[in-house]
Image (tube, rainbow, N blue to C red; front, side):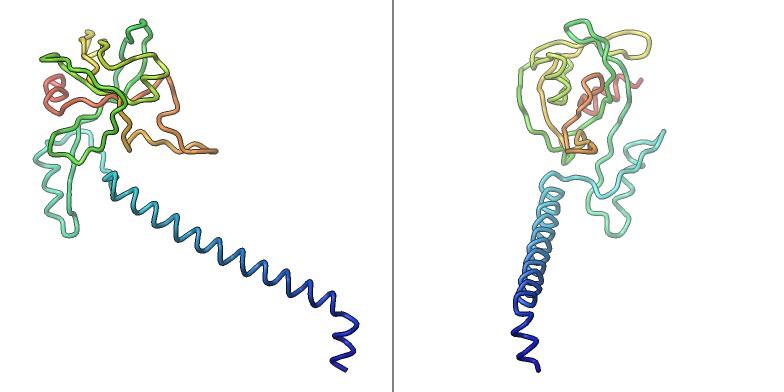
Amino acid sequence: MFRAILKKYWKLLLSILLVSSLGCAAMTGLSGSYLSLETSLNSYVRDYAYPDAVITTGITTRDQADTIAAIAGVSEVNSRLMGDTVIKSPQGRYLSIRAISYSEGDFQQFYFWEQADGGEADGVLLEFNFAEDNEIHAGDTIQAKVGDEYRSYFVEGIVSAPETLSVQPAENTWGANSDFGYVYAPHELLKKEEN
């Protein structure tokens, strides 16, 4: 009886076996890809010192923020000043920026596209796509609004950094909006301008 069924339906049974095998192979490949992507993500987070947590507060001191390091399980704390303002580009365009401080001791990761030596001038770093979209280069001078006046800053470099990674519906891009960008300034400079 089994032979009769096998003889009559052998093509159907073969197609079922083939489809099942292809399904198992596809699922095995997908699970392998998932594990590979997870490993890549963990490597990216480690290599670029991307934070596990971000805490935003309106008013605090750097010393108060550093007390977070006393919490069990916290290995490193980077506290930064951050604020939004407007800059005037060398071409005369008014653009919105988010200024983020950095210090020598921070684990800030920068990939430099361009660099220039400004000597004793107050120097800042601009995010790559924002600078490229607005034709700003290392060595240029930008005007940033501080309080009620505009002050000049030397563009020491054009950089990419993990903070500027923004997720878009279709793809990952580095700072996709040309009218808004990031500027990185030494902590001491932002602290001085804050007062």
